Image (cartoon, rainbow, N blue to C red; front, side, top):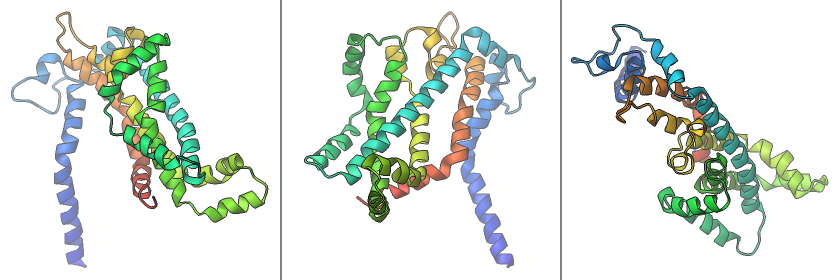
Length: 278
């Protein structure tokens, strides 16, 4: 009994020590968010501020339209997540259950799209969006993730999950008179809630952290998303205003922390189930 307790305490102690390199940067960011510019780089460095500068957070909103930029990121990430769930679940179910000529080749082409870096496609996408008149709008930030590599990954995960579902449930639904669309809506989707949750979370986080696409397609500061807004806290010489950047970053990580803490199990479960059946 005593030996098992010692072993448990030892494991917790080892995990706590191992977590320090991962937790310390977050703690330093939160600490520096309440410091002045000089104190951030003071020698020796301190984790606890001498004076809590709450004014840093107020200055973040007065320096640029940070509240609007925050809302931009929120609604874009939510819209991308919703559309990706819709199209990925439809396409994933079709690839898992409908046998048609060229389905294997189509799946291979979709998976091969995951191997292409975004930097390779950004130039043709730029010309495409310019021809469509969508420059300096949020449309590219929604369309490209939904129908790009993020959408492909979501489709693949949903397809793998649908492949693992027992067909007997769907066959019974067909006997009850449901159409294929009805089976997808009333049988497949409710059973795939863990995969839907994981895909939605991963998609939300990817959209929230987009930097290259907003940098290329958006020039109006009012349309900036948070990654661009964080890089815009600079002085007249283009040097970073670290106290404002760190305060803004502390605010920006709140949704991602909430998502990770609330649904990390679904993310792990989805990746585990994605390899159950090919």
